[in-house]
Image 1 (cartoon, rainbow, N blue to C red):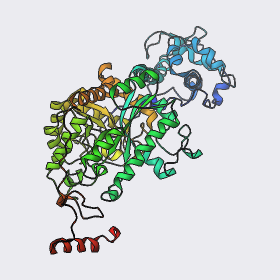
Image 2 (tube, rainbow, N blue to C red):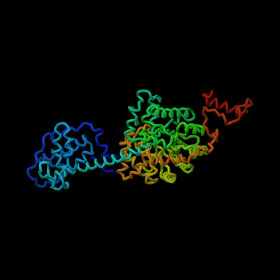
Image 3 (spheres, rainbow, N blue to C red):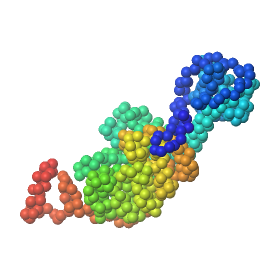
Image 4 (cartoon, one colour):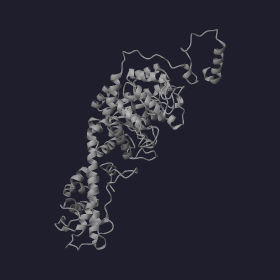
Length: 553
């Protein structure tokens, strides 16, 4: 069935998803009954009892059966050959579709004659007022059978209208996506060697993202994730982060016709005008700054424009979402004093604060402290799917009060709390955030190439137009859809830029040494100049460090 009713949380079949994927796709095989034209009825049949199942009468009404098969096949043939627009236009008079059906093999033009009665006749289904191609009257049962495929046709036409509107909107307002892990895939698959022929981004396979898919999805700006896992914390996190920022810069260098590396909202708008994908750096995980304001500033100068305060691990100064599940213990009760310094320095520099992966206490502490709006670069609504990676309603209220933004994640587990999800359920998250925090608080952060399970209908970055069409179908206004696509993020970015103050003195207070975990790190600057007259306690501490950390030798 082309027009599926939404009932409960189950998957919804979108009419758009049933359209041909390419205009040159193979035509359906012609039914044998269509090889010859059914003879016209010579007289009106007596009224027959309505059968239990919808469809033409059986037995002696074999002609109607063949006619119905031919009519349905005519419609499918036109749909596949000329697309929904011509097929829908042909509904008033199927003669307009004759040209496209004649292109089909095997004498398919006969089908238009057989189906023209249903497509071109006037009157209401069920009434005996229709006439066939040869002028004969069409029995009421046949007209009623025509209505069986009239409504699916209407559904296809309507769905196509929403998709067309979405694409028209996205021509001028392309998607700004908040989180894509393609750089991580480039590291895993090719060790960041972009000139490896297999790493060609115009033909890259087995990823959610490549250049043709970005074009098809009308992606106009992307925050690429410079991600390094939690097991690099207190080890080589900074080095790994620098390498991931470097690979993002090299993407722009290697594909200048597609990517434009930018660092501000003005650059995003410039990329829109040039038809390129504005490429920005988002560092995913506060462990990447190694608890250093100096490293934070250095990453800013390298192009980082948002920092996710935590990944799925605590930092010495902020708690992550696993604290809310009981898996991790709270270390900072949300945000430590040094964590507050990080937030203030990000405000001063003009770095967007990202609260995806943060604990609820961290979310609330930051939303109350920050002088600029914040984002959740890839999180969804907790009330729709009760996963702790999602944003609860009381936090959504703070999002509304601060003009902040939740960029909805497409990971199936965060969408439906199950391994399977669908596009309609993603739209449910958008609806809920709009209801609680307002349409200006909604954005998109698909988490492509960073997750293993995605909803049906959103399997890669080319599918954004289908999500925009779904919002239009749900009666979101064009202005609201433009907000979701790009305008809401641009507003937040501009507010962050306006709140920055590079004339203000930078923060200098380091994190207390005692708050750093024991690791192979030096302690330069935390004590006076080295002395040959070390106290006994200092000597013991040094010996303990050597025992615990032999790699320091």
